[in-house]
Length: 458
Image (cartoon, rainbow, N blue to C red; front, top):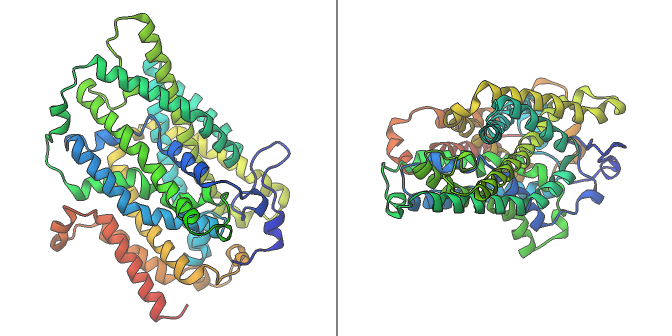
């Protein structure tokens, strides 16, 4: 991909230290994040006080089947996640900039607005979980904590990827210790019947369960991965095993916490009647142990902050992708990212207050229907039609004419994928008992798009 002079000289932060790069390509000097940091970044983004919710989503299938579903989800999602990881290193911009050439400039910008709303939904879910923990610990109104945590998260995102990565790196040990303590108290405070945990109490619907976990984790995050790996070492500077490590680091990082913390959430639901182990009131005899549990729960609530920052960060990138054509003045453009982050953070707190956590399963199914087909179509277009064939400046040039702003082939293929994902397909109902319908639909959308661009003209 051809680099422009502007890309090399782009300002990453302003004098106040706030990130202002927006959706422009990351300059070479700022692309130095290693695979280990990428793994840690996504592991910490995935690990939060909301992650044990995975245990509730599959509650009743038994721990053994839960582990199998998570591992199968990793196998299904790892390749798309790896391809997006490398996309960010090949062309250091968010996915919704790439999709300007896939869907057309104006169409992609419209999608940017839509996916901004999706990210705000995730922010609201996580903010609600953290607020409930702090409200439980302090016997106060959770709305207070929704607002307090929202402010902290907005401030963190204002300083951008560099400080997000620092925050994740140094809160990782606190997160691990906090959940180790809470898990210990869970298994020592309640009578643990391992037979009860292992034995299914309900039938396993593999297709639906895989859909829920994929949407809760790896495939929901996939299109956001390039937003972080654009800061990683450029693709051309790596080879062989190093490339493999960069490719799989985000996907594996996302799924490890889902597996481990999902098991904790499953057990917590079974014995304490609450998947949110950080909000469980443990029947501990000593005041010292109660204090330890209190501090550990505070540590767990801190984990919400770093996960939610990673929901707000790409939400800002999505919004800026849509708004970039309106910022022609350089002085105004450098404040677009901080202002957008603040406004979006406030809106997301509003979703937490409105009770989005109560509708999480429907939200996850909606995410699968709408985001999976987009993800697969963008992957096909990047690796078949765009990579190394389109100069970088073309992704930032507003084209003239309807058909340059609306790629009917991509839109049609994605629409077919969404329809196949959302609608009941009687003849294939047996297949969807074992295989996630949104993934099947997305593969069909990707195949259809590949056929259309192969047999037709650009």
